[in-house]
Image (cartoon, rainbow, N blue to C red; front, side, top):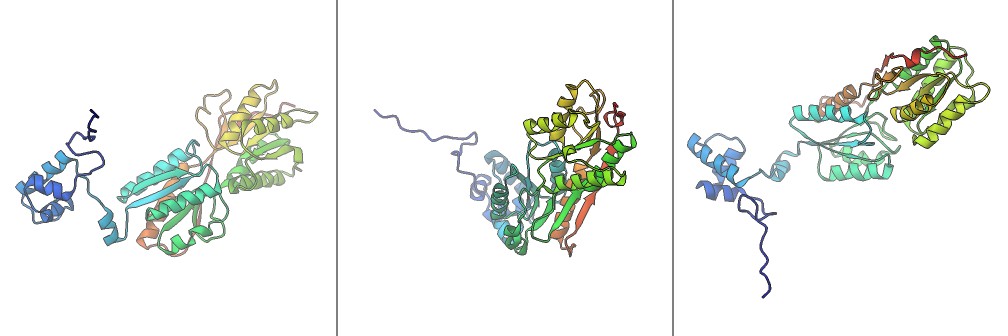
Amino acid sequence: MPETPRRAVGISGNRYGNRPTMKDVAARAGVGLKTVSRVVNGEAGVTPETERRVQEAIDALGFRRNDSARVLRKGRTATVGLVLEDLADPFYGPLSRAVEEVARAHGALLINGSSAEDPDREQELALALCARRVDGLVVIPAGDDHRYLEPEIKAGVATVFVDRPAGRIDADCVLSDNFGGAREGVAHLVAHGHRRIGFIGDMPRIHTAAERLRGYRAAMEDAGIAVEDAWMSLGATDPGRVRRAAEEMLTGPAPVTAVFSGNNRVTVTVIRVLAEQSRRTALVAFDDLELADLLQPGVTVVAQDAAAIGRTAADRLFRQLDGTLIAPERIEVPTRLVTRGSGELPPAD
């Protein structure tokens, strides 16, 4: 005989997929629906004994309030979205945590996802979050055209861009001082006697990479040093490309005596290449990285304050939601030069 299929049952006795309702709670507690509603929503008018019975029923059944109706009434979901570039990048860990802490302080839930530096995926993710009626968005942009968000912003979705400005729309953005930080880092190498300084950075279309290159050029110009094309390399941050660029700069009749690396992914490969060289080369890196202080010598870095960036962006977001902001602003968070030894090495020749 064929076996009769059995329904999957949860620990409370309900079938999986069938969530307990307020009607179930009311039946178990022996009260009316309005009484359950008052307890669930923290309203007055319920005796302590009745509230206890309702709460026991809620706990026994595993009831959770459905906020959909409340959203329709209040027009707010108490959720915000965060569109990151790369969840694996350590820079975004403290940034995301800071946004989450501010959101939590405002009673909101944070939902995040990664664009993987793909503009189409960024747009898809941002619009998917808007379709779920998030109250606001914090976006680390992968693309350079954000007009697709204009209808959402006009509809009331608070929006703040982080790390890079929005493209082709006027919106709040919170950035590191990429230009000033790079200028300070390269000037530090110049102050320690270097004249042939290489720059290895990210794709030139990326705002941060372009600003850091501009800071490098400004510091060299300040020092009266004519930059040679062979000293600069921008492109993908994959180890193969960065390794080739570093090896080319470090070889030949007039190799660079110092390197300024444009971000933490570039720095990791540059450190590996420098470790293989017989001649010591100075290094200053934009972005701090884990264990940088334990290397010999420790890595001198231009450190970004990712947590401050995240907090500032989230504060701006909730001020938009509160209606206390009028015009979009561009805010730059200062960087900090951290000296550990690699940036203080003198030229080898």
